[in-house]
Image 1 (cartoon, rainbow, N blue to C red):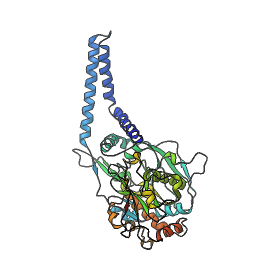
Image 2: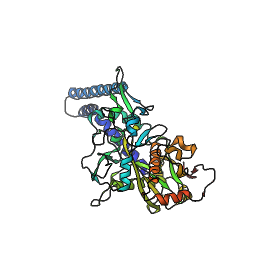
Image 3: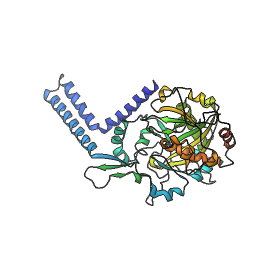
Image 4: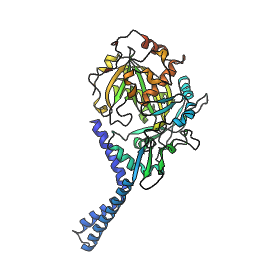
Length: 428
C-alpha cells in the first residue's frame, strides 16, 4: 500500500511540473471550456465560439512548440568517462575508488577527523532550489528518466559546506531539498545536453562539478543539490557481511550489489531540536534506517554502529557519500530467513551474506579485492567506497569497533567452505 502511495505522490509531482511547463496550454484549455460553457448561457454565441477557438489555438501552438523543443534536445550519457585525467588531483585527496561503471574518491583527512572527533552540524532554513540553467532542462530529463526508474519525490538533506580536515571547530551545513531536485542536478551531471544542429553542447556535465582549474568544486560553491548519501556495512555475529542486490529499475545502482543499507539522508534522521547535533550522529541514524528498511531488521537487533568515512561520488555529480559499519546482534541465517518488505521490493531484489578476504590483505586502493571473486564485477560504487573506508578504519588502532569486528571476522568458519555468497531463500 505504501509503495502505491509513493507512486501516486511521484506521479502527481511530475504532473504539477507538467502543468507549469504547459501553463499556456492550461490557459488555452480554460478558455476552451469557458467558450463551451458560456455558449449555453447569455453571452453571444460569437464570443463563446471565439474564446473556444482561441483556447484551442493557443493550446495547440504551445504543445507543438514544446514537442519540437523536446525532439531537438538530447541528453548524451558519459558512461565511458572514468575521469582518469583527474587522477592526480583526485589522488591527492585520498584513494580513488572505481567500480564497474563509476568512480569516486575517499576523503582521507576528513574521514580520519570523523572517526576521531565529533563534527558539529547545522540545518539551514532555506531549501535548495534548482538554478535557472538547470531548470531549463529539468522537466525533459525528469520525464524521460521517470519512465524507466522507480523514484519517489521525498524530502532529502544536502550538504552545503565541506567537512573540516583538521582540528578546526566549524559546523557542517545541511540544507533541505527534494529528491527530484537532486535527480535534476547531481544525476544530470553525468550527461551532456545537446541540441540538434549545434556543434557544441548546450551544457557540459563536467562543468557542474569542476572549477576552471579542474578541481572538484567545494560544496559551498556547488550549484547542485548534493544529497547526502549514507550506507552501512552490517556484520553478523558469525562474521558475515550482509549485502543487498538492487532491483534493475532502482535509480541508485540498478541491478548491482550494494551495501547492507544505502540511500539518502532525510530530515527525519536529524535528532529532535535541542540535542547537540553532529554529522556522525545524523549519518548513523540515516544509515541504520536504510539498513532496517532494506534488510527487514529491527532497531533492537542492531548492536552498535561507527562512522568510517566520507567520500565524493565523482560520476554522480561529486555528491557526498558517508559510510558506517554496523555490528548486528543476529546471525547471517537469521537475516537471510526474512522476507523483503513489500514497500522495498521496487528497490531490493535480494539479500546476501558473504565472507570477506582476510584482513591482512585489505588495501583501501583495491577495495573490490576484499569481496568474493564472483561478485566483484557486480559491486556498486557505494559498496566499493565503503570497503575502502573499512580497510582504512581497521588499520586505525583507535577505531572503536576494530577489536570486536576483527574478532568476528577471524572466528572459526561456520558457513560452507565454498565461500560463495549465501542468498535469502525468501528474496526475489
